[in-house]
Amino acid sequence: MALIPPAAPTLAASSARLSVLPPIVRVRIAGRRRSAVLANLSSPPRSVEAVDWVDATSSFFEQDTRPIMLFDGVCNLCNGGVKFVRDNDRQRRIRFEALQSDAGKNLLQRSGRSPDDISSVVLVEKNRSYIKSEAVLKIMEYIDLPFPQLAFFLQFVPLFIRDFVYENIADNRYAVFGRSESCEI
Image (cartoon, rainbow, N blue to C red; front, side, top):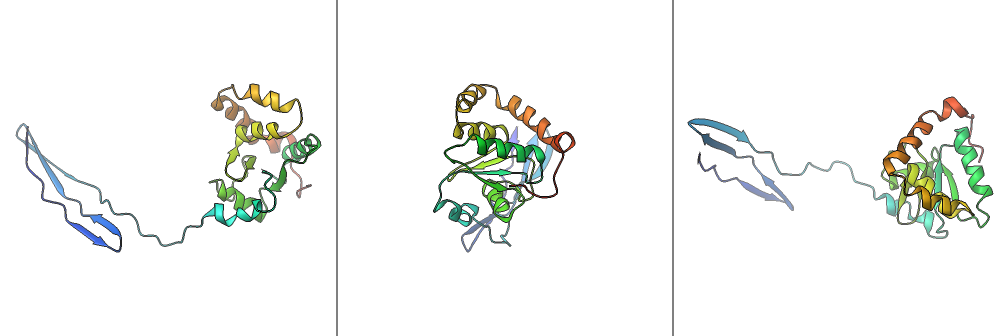
């Protein structure tokens, strides 16, 4: 196999961006000739300023460092879950916010999720966020006995199984438990 050396790529540096123009590479294999164009390595232009959602929502944790449980405010199952957590959190270690609120949408974006994604409960701590079954287990760690111990044992169930069960319940929550007109909390 004989290689024909490609033309040297042209480099252009402009305002801290390095751009490599795609060379044509010709490879000769047993009398045949192949050509391929390499991809352009320059980064796409940034037209919109990116928002740092951790900085934008840091005020939520300045005065009060307790984690925030985000929940679907119109889901009867979710509202029941919030009431259950409130009743079993005698030391008030968790705060609550509806996913549909402005604060909830901002915290969703902080967690790397779409601001309109109401498919999962989310637990937002100062330095980390949890979703789906991981959020449920983490919430169980914050509330009173025997739930932290139950969460310890449930963590040994593989994540894909826990999330499969969680997603099936979440996908059918309105059909089974119904929805309310507004958030009750």
